Length: 225
Image (cartoon, rainbow, N blue to C red):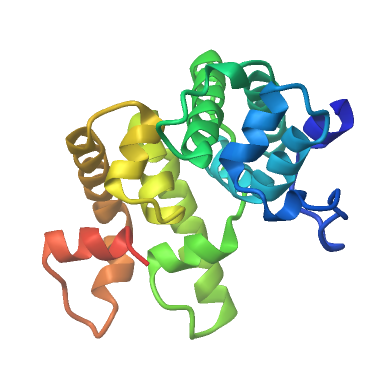
């Protein structure tokens, strides 16, 4: 069991591991229930099933692979130990995301006294945030780096909301459940975060066709698929 919850890091190729017979068809609630009942395999299956998405949240929130791996390990160990506290009135993924986000936020608070390091290059989504990726590679890379540098300047609450809603595709209600706040708070944080990004990325917005775009429309385009 220990090896299942401590091998945390960037997803690796090689295909899914073989699962014990029948477990691959069980839903998350049943796997967690069996874990609480003492089954030695089912929590590891949950980790393998959702690790990639949890990793994406951790790396985009913390911006540093080693920190993200440590936070994710802490989160999965916490979930492993606290599984009996899951009440069953939400999705297991919502519960797991809440634990992962809280582990990331705890690390951010602990390191706030230090100067933040540059974010890693989350290439796919960074390029999406700044716009279409059709021209020359140098321009695409410059745009991507601009977006990542802009994201560094958003406070932790706004960044967490944007990571969940704009990068991971969660609904406002789902993000609110994960973050433990009201949907209106998530909407407000996303709006403020996009507003912070807009002036930092305006030069990319205004070069689409050579004319400026309304602030609200531009802010929405910065944060949507």
